[in-house]
Structures are given as C-alpha cells and as structure tokens.
Image (cartoon, rainbow, N blue to C red; front, side, top):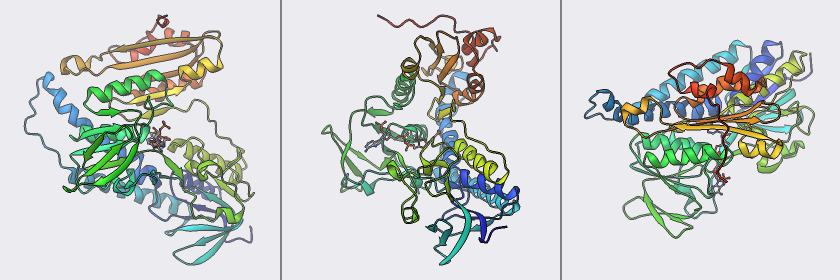
Length: 457
Ligand code: NDP
C-alpha cells in the first residue's frame, strides 16, 4: 500500500491506456484513468474502426458496378451519407460504452477531464481543478493530426478528425499526403462517388512500403479514376466566390474543390501536458522518450502507444500497455517484440505487408531472392474490372528464410495476418512450397510461386 491516491494514474483512455489500466487493475492495483474526449481513443472513436466502416460503405460503390457482370441489375442505386454516419455513430457509441464498462468492471476510476502532469507523482485534473497523486503515471495520450500551418489558408482544410462527421459528402475532394490516411480516404471518397485528387510531395506514395506495393497502389488509384499528382506541395488555399476552395500547388497549377483534406501525418499529443515541467525528456516531434520498459526519463512516469512514436499502430499500443502492466503489476517482466509486425493499408484494393521490403532486405542480407507475381483475380474476370493482385515474397538466398511478404489485392489484410505467423516463426520458402494450395483462391499463389524473379538487366 502506498501513500499515493492511486498506484497507477493513466492519462488517455485509448487502446494502450485502457489495456494497461484494465490489466493493472485486474492484478490488484488501484487505478485512475483520465480522458478528455471519449473513452476508446483514436482507434475506436475517430480512427481504425469508423474508418473501416467507411471503407466497407465505399466498397459497395464498386460492388454495384462489378455485380453487372454477374447478372445483377442495380439501377437507380443511391447513397445516403447521413444514414451511414448515423449508423456508424451508433456503433461507436456502443463500443464507447463497452470500453467504459470494461474499465469500470476492472475496478478503475474514470475521470472525464483533461489531465496534466504537475510533477513526478502528481496529476492535475483540469476540469475538476484538483490534484491527484500516483505512484506511477502512464501517459497514453496518442497522437493528433498535423497540418502544415505555414500554408496560407491551411485552416480551410479538414483532417481525419472532422472527416468522420461531415454534414454532407463533398462532390470533389483534394487530399494532401501519400501515407496511410491519405490513400485510405482517397479510396473511401472515390468509392462513395466523389471526384478525388491526391497531391503528394514525393514521387512514390506509401514510400515506406516495398516499392512494388507503392507502384501497384498508385496504378490502382489511377485505374479507379483518382487523379494522383506527385512532387507537388500546397502553396496556398483560398475561398472562391462560389464558396469552393482553390488549392494552388507548387507546380503552378490550381484546383477548385469542395473539400481539402490534410493527411500529412500525425504528431504525438504531448502539447500542454506539463511533461517538461516534470522533467520528462521529449524527442523529435514532441514524442516521449522511453526505454524498453516504456519508462521515461522520470522513473515514475511511463508512456505507451503513439505518444512515444515507436510503431504507431493500435495492436502495438495494446501490447506495450500489456507489457507495462505485466512487468509492474504482475511481477512478470515482459517486453514488446517489434519484429515482423503485420501492416495493412485499407486502400481499395488493400495492402498487406509483413517483414522486410526488398530494399531493406538487400541492405541487410547478402543474397536476396524475390518471388513475385501480378495477375487479374478470378472475381474480376466476369466483373470486367481491370483490378490486379500483386504478391511478393522476399527470401534470404543463403538460409531460404522468408523475410517479407507484400500483397496488394482483395483481402490482402486478412491474408497477411496469417502469413505473418509463418514469417515471424522464421519459416522457409520450402515450407511455403511444401504447403498444398487451396484452390481457387488468391492466397494459393503464395505457395505456388516457384520461379525467382530476375530483374531486366
Ligand atoms: P503517414 O506518415 O503514413 O503519411 C504522411 C504523409 O504526409 C506522407 O506521405 C508524407 O510524405 C506526407 N507529408 C509529411 N509532411 C508533409 C508536408 N509538410 N507537406 C506535404 N506532405 C507531407 O501519416 P498518416 O497521417 O497517413 O498516418 C499517421 C499514422 O497513423 C501512420 O503512420 C500509421 O502508423 C497510423 N495509421 C495506420 C493505419 C492502418 O494501420 N491502416 C491507418 C491510418 C493511420 P513522405 O512520405 O514524403 O514523408
């Protein structure tokens, strides 16, 4: 028993904070949690979950068209944005309720207020204007969309935060960025019937992925009619007389649009948290610097999830939160393993990726073998769609170990979760070859790629 109000006080009830708090509470700690917005955090309230519902909604946009080749007539179909948002919001409310219940059932106290750190053991509850002490403080405040405020008129644009609550669906959207959120929302808006233009500052979108993924996604965006402008930045955004927004680009072009969508990255949410006063060291972008136990430079202050800017994904935050609780409240020292984390971009078609990209493998291994294929999947033959699948295995030529797998195509995210087990377990290309194909599927190509890819000289 300590002399503090709480054994653990968590700021931020998102994926990482909730997991750590629930587990610590279950292991007998007295836990308090403060949340300034809604329990559930970005993933549940205005990220992964509502995004996936918008993805499902927009897939029907292509589905009605593709169904014609299968004999369906789908005349006069219409789409109601308000209905979608209402249904999505109802589901988010339900999930929010479950998260609150789970925390309470675990025995944690929830404080619906912004909380700031006062010192190594004190948290100030802003809305209640009082202090609470804790033996350990866990910062799990996540990240927040970043916009380039050096661009005149930047505030005429919206971010993903607002996109989930638009009053009506715009006819034309300009998206800035070439990462996860930009690509996913470009596809969502396109599938729902908007004209979409994506403006990316570099040459290759999704540049952190394998180059073949980048090329394939770029091709698929263009195939579905998304205009992709590369090597261009926003110079300014202005309101036109008709109420539209005019985006001027560094290329000299301008585009008139109904909505400008910023998707140029997210930043750790540490602003105004009082961390500097408490002596917590921050790194690039304001991320909390932590060691492999998620401990900050102040021994009693810890941080998990996007606020540490390690690998910014929900399941990682959850694992980091669990490792923290196991280590400090269950006498079970546990470390997060960051190797071979599967990733997905819910573009249309989606991306699934695990392990080394080809360029990363070539940098680290002497002999790298590549197996890859692109093909038109069976479903698209009758639909008449030109959508293609790209699959690639990156293999260590010396040991035969599969180092990475990258897929662009229908159900890529579902496939990659399973492939990730094999890749993380260190299985060899021979193990893939020895596995009997499941026919007819897209995934069977993963075990039937026999010929090494030889690049053109
Ligand atoms: P990303 O880091 O994926 O992409 C940011 C994009 O913005 C990049 O293309 C980047 O270009 C570009 N950019 C950065 N600065 C500027 C600038 N000043 N002007 C113009 N463009 C700029 O961030 P997101 O916001 O898309 O997503 C944030 C994080 O959230 C992701 O990293 C991911 O971890 C997570 N996320 C995961 C999802 C999933 O798992 N499916 C879905 C959504 C988010 P460049 O490439 O040249 O740096």
